[in-house]
Length: 156
Picture: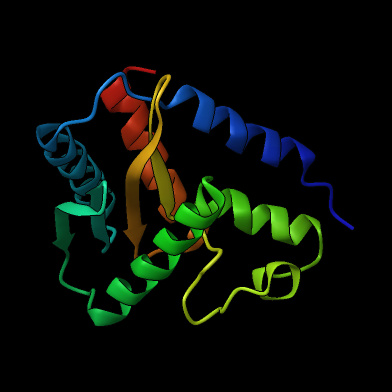
């Protein structure tokens, strides 16, 4: 069986490193545009969704994306809110344990998707206040799209 320890450690490190001191509506717009710019530059078709305290601050859908992406986003966000970790971290943790969220935690897979692409908005010394979510690519690519854009915005 594959050892996921290094990847899990890296994903936790990202959550510790990619934290804000404050997060405003304008920050959401700047971040959303960074994610879109990256997607356009790479020729990727995605949907981006940024929420703070349950309020939708940014949502953009590129040409090849439809309602199915919105459903994936909602399911990934549910995972982040439930576990307070990125949806990709939970995906890898479930793979490492050779289980699923349905089997391990009795969670409805129609409402929760442990796939990459949703990342918690974390405020240092406060905690989680929202989510940044990308849908349209493979899970690890959705996750990387968010992380790379956060690194750029936060100068990490």
